[in-house]
Amino acid sequence: MRSAPARRDIKHDVLKAVFGFEGFRPGQEAAIDAVLSGQNVLAVMPTGSGKSLCFQVPALMTGGLTIVVSPLVALMQDQVAALRLAGVAADTINSAKPRDENVAVWRRVAAGETRLLYLSPERLMTEPMLAALARLKVSLIAVDEAHCISQWGPAFRPEYEALARLADTFPRVPIIALTATADEATRADIAARLFGGKVEQIVLGFDRPNIRMTAEAKNGGKQQVLDFVRAHRGQSGIVYCLSRKKTEAMAALLNENDITALAYHAGMSKEERETNQNRFMTEPSLVMAATIAFGMGIDKSDVRFVLHADMPGSLEAYYQEIGRAGRDGANARAHMLYGQGDIRMRRMFIDDEDAGEERRKREHKRLAALVSYCETQNCRRQILLSYFGELSAPCGNCDNCLSPAGLSDGTKDAALVLQVVARTGERYGAAHIVDILRGANTEKVTAAGHASLHQFAEGRARKKEVWSSLIRQLVAGEFLHHDIDGFGGLSLLDKGRALLDGKQSFHHRPHMAQTPARRGRDDNASANMSGEQAQLLAELKKLRFSIAAARKVPAYLIFSDRSLIDMVRLLPRNADEFALVNGVGTSKLEAFGQQFIAAISKFHASRS
View 1: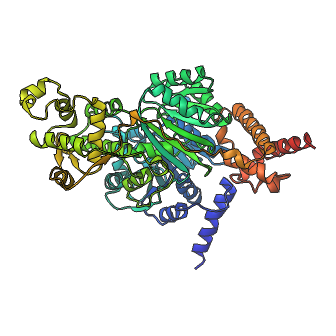
View 2: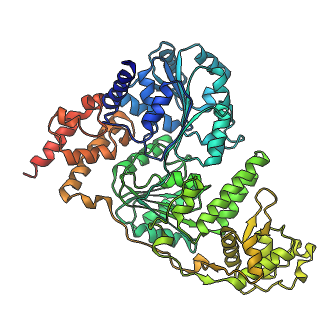
View 3: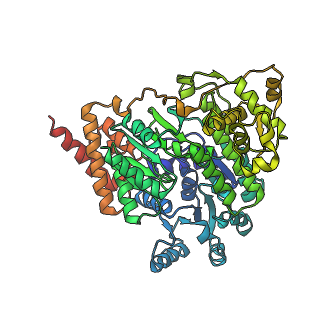
């Protein structure tokens, strides 16, 4: 009768002694209890909610080895470094390390000295590695960033699909899969592929109400970026770009305009990436221009904005990327620039991927959902949350709620579009419909005889982008259906037929490139700090950076920004008081406590 309370005490003791936290966050304890009872678990938890603890705590409570599957070498190395700083025996075997180091790691693993071993799916899913691990006492397998199983194509990371073999190779070992972003289709895909459908799902709410969501069509993109970043001068932010080349150009553009910026992408050397990442974590007003290579595992609490200079790949990707803003709970911004060129590029990426037809159809559906988010006249948060299966009221914290765009009566133009769709057999895509409206004598138009339609060239006075935007809004408003499963053709829905019968009107947002960007007020998270507190925080960040540099690890692994802010507020004078700081466990107390206590004491002595 005493086993359950004893286990509960051990769980909380590990949380406090190793990781320095007083209590579990929502979802963590349920996931840990399910794993400890031998169940498979799929945990979908928002960015910053502490997913790693869901496998790290049980790994330290049970004997044997925990295998952690992670997609990026840099992410693995950072997590291993963080665990070691917390006094945990963690290791990684990866391609970035010399062979002799990997051999030494394996010897520790085989000897039972390592509690958590981080591996990429490519390293894990080899016959020699699986055979060697099968001879050891493996107690838990954790698959981090599990959405990659579904969303990264088999041609890109085929070993993610091969992870389905883990349940057969380790039949009595519980598996926990974790991700911050997975819609219902992705969750079902992960459950089927990795668990054969037998899995306990723990899905927390997706809402991040402190992040204001805005979007606008591209119209001189460089100037739009500069205007947005200047409006947030002195704040930390991330500007996401589609390519490495654009990332470098964006960092140069910002620096030329007196905005301190750095670049980050996979083509840079490891040393350059680490240097830039450390500066970003330490300096309060630095902007990082980056590809999606930047972000996984980054825990900087005071990122005040995430700007997408190019359209992301999907709503899942967008949700994950904007989740790097406002982790301290203070107001933050997520702004996206999008254009017809972005949409074409994303469609090309999908069509060029060496994957099956079913996957292509699904990715086109995801892209269509993202385009609907961009073009919607309704609450953006409602659109985003409903995509993940979560219902909500209008948020009051997106551009469409705060400053609704003036809607124009577009019934006449909509009727013209719908007529063309109907007269051409409801099987052609938007590009062909626009060509007919604008009177373009393309080979396809000529071959189909569509130049003889009464509506041919009726819309020549409007630009292609205007008609494309209107069609996307007709799709978003359920006047038209975009047949992703077929060949991308447009067909009429009930509302569209009603409009042609004169029983339905259509109001739309004018093409956004013709309207000024809508902006709202932003609050600086440091507003709640006094000037003296802000200065102390800056000093503690300098100390953190110097310690990190000496240990050759990213600065945030020493202490998170949350921990430093807690130090500023608590002003610990001795080890007992320092132990009360959020995120200070036994190992970090012994390693760093006196240095930070001394820095706090020195700072206040200089001002007394």
